[in-house]
Length: 383
View (cartoon, rainbow, N blue to C red):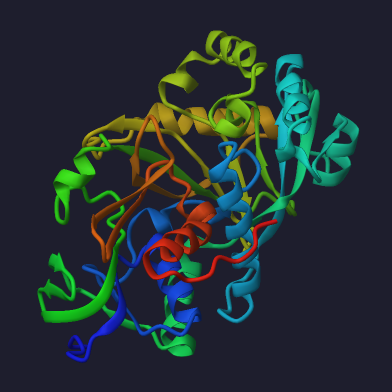
């Protein structure tokens, strides 16, 4: 498709989940929207993750509030966009008194509303007998849900195009953003406002603005495992997640848990391993993940990372992992001091980068906030 010389109310650069979220919010408000993507389809972090819309455990404050709103939007959007909700809820298992103390502290915060602490027996009953011999208890949260990333992201793009009239320009690179003109590899496009969602591209557009936030990249290792013969109604995490997800890790009891886990599982920490287990309609599990950070992480994932992921799976579920069907890596932007940033290179431009791997979990809420500022669109009430 050739860019429309008549122009658009909003141009979105990038068709990952953050770009699609901004396109959805603007198109739903009746604006004429174009999405410009340099690849033939979304191929980055947005389709390489768990598809886990995580509310529970997000950093306390704004990220948690954005996740609550984003979860609402996914739930409302899934049916019209023909996106299947694969799982609802989350279990976080705890194998020690230190881990239980973190869960109890979490339940005492506003973030624990609606959640409950299960005994080992109650968790076994809810999960069909899962849990190791050392299981001390588990948190259950009803707030989270899961979609299949590799199909949900394309389905969302199709819905935006067919139902909301969003124009997509695939395999089109944007060289310059100077509203009302965007220079692309297929010619010029005009838009009154622009949102740039570059994923982990730090150099193509506004590199000096991005550099000011000192981002790096995180490489993660992911696995798809064969159908284990049981059904997980909810996603599952374990002790290591309690010292990685800031909603838990920032609580005072997490320090003692981290010290214990560093002593007992040092290589898991070296590989940045924690456990998420989700399940698709075909019964297969998506399991991960590890975290290695650098300005440009090498494409070579250590075999020890996979071994540690599978080891944590066995510890948490009390049974060995089924065979590996697929392996892949992903890259996402990361920053030590923030979960996202929004920059304004121009009054009509916003540069939006999620720097915590939480795009699917916070993207719609973030888009509403950004477009409220940029275009004065109303923000939906957040509960």
